[in-house]
Length: 45
Image (cartoon, rainbow, N blue to C red; front, top):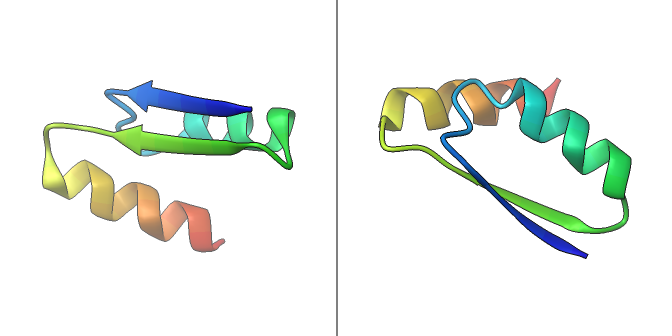
């Protein structure tokens, strides 16, 4: 399964979705680069 999460912000919901559909793939996008940076850091935890 592949999911596109639009306006992912800090990635909290996107990460939860990724865990729910594993081993599927979730891609998060956001218009604010700063939010993508935060989401990437949250994904590393």
